[in-house]
Length: 284
Image (cartoon, rainbow, N blue to C red):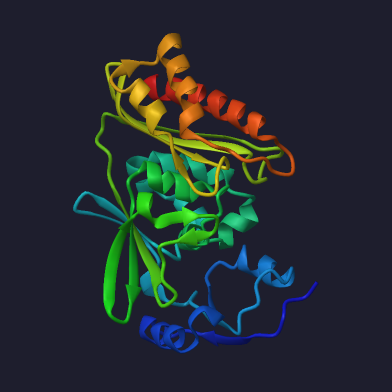
């Protein structure tokens, strides 16, 4: 299939983007990496009147470390994050997750902000941002506001982003040196969307885990924070009994639905397997 007809504008400034969004509202779509949007257009799943190309807005790119925060521009590509020495040093969870995103060609073009704004429930970055307590900087003509990742994702492809706002930057606090991270996922083939995945962060104090965050992807309509499993492991070592208690708690944390390939029961079992693997990695 071919995309429906639409108008196209290459934005020269954020102010120009705000003008167009105020004029066209939800009838306009922002074009960043385009790895999801172009496919949706070609399959007639999206039919905007206007595409606003923001790829040339330099102020939306880059990775900076300042005041204990890593600031990642929304147009930073998956590949740039994967290759970044700053990310590997300060936010290893992102470095661990990046190779799981599709294939190299997609990672070279797709953007960090685009993945977050789309809010695909099987995408890696939203779950990572929830686990890392990220803040999203949303801008419009009236100014900017910050929304915590845990409050940003509202449901299936639904976020707190308003029609006249642009996600410009992601701010992530740098975990202390005692923190560990683990990213694990299961897919039918390398590069496919995850059947289930888990982004995990915790403080490791001589093998005991605290401030644990377990954010799942692929098992619900939005990233799912497994609060019961987190509470079950708080302050404990990753012994077989403690891991068993955490995996049992997932029954109240998660409510996965089936997809084309996996039943709800299969997804729950995979979530338990991933939890055991992640907890063992965090405690190592």
